[in-house]
Image (cartoon, rainbow, N blue to C red; front, side, top):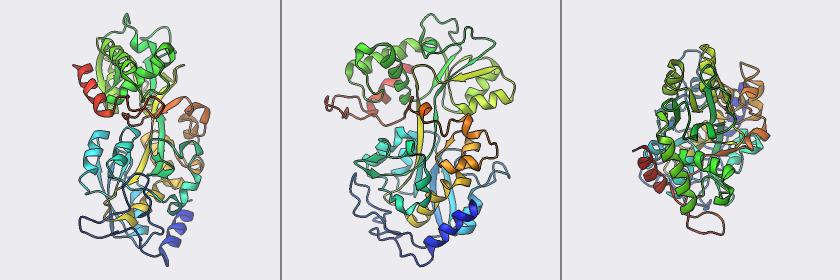
Length: 399
């Protein structure tokens, strides 16, 4: 599979014309990998030219591995050897941090989650992507294409990388009976008070909204990211009530892993990879997709509208979703790969089954993170709460 991909890269390089994007590859402040204006594709490249020698990325930890973390985990070095593009990576610890870094114009691309993508698009910090220049895009699972968090008015602003759900996990030796609903983490009379955990981000408000959408239909919530005053206040009130139950919030998965291993947390939101790590350490845990469904993430590689090395960035976007590289990332990071052909390339043949990679019915129950906007995107108009208001509310919730 890797050989097949490298032949595709070679075909793009041999005889290819330079990018036609205005100012592409220059060093001045007007350099651009394409326009960042929403819906404007006039400056979008039509071909990939010779690599510029390097590419500067912002990424989640575990997405850009060159063997320095683990000598056996390296999909960066083969990319550098075949393209001549040296990979420089800055780790983004949160979506907010990634958005801030992208505004500097010092990076060519970012692995953005859905709670960052629309902010980057609206600000003009990322450019439309010509998916025809990313051959491996053809093999991306259909359920990951044309998603509202990275496609605006039919214009693509990135290449899907991977996905996962925010699950409900508990210690089986402490929690009884087994929960099947998010109600377990919102029950004001919970016997596990002080040992419940939740994800530490304003986007977690959507988890409360999703629960209310399923349990209080009178609120009229149809999308957990599109909340008017009454709906938003109901979700915030539920989370303020939950605050008295929370032992700790987490954003670093190693922090939650340690809390469950030590028994400081026994119930709460998790990722499949955390469950896998705990089970490998013989910690008695179980995780499910509750009956209400769940929020989740679908990460997207996006190119900066001020990219200094756009050719290398296009090569990177194609490489990272090639069957073999995408399989390696998915297994290392702990998520479902984006490329359907990756399922035949994983070291563990059960990887795609574990992460429900080709189970669209499973992901139909998952609401991918997206950036809350004032425009409700329905006939209510601009009466929904935007991300800045979610951020302010989250500060108040945590106290």
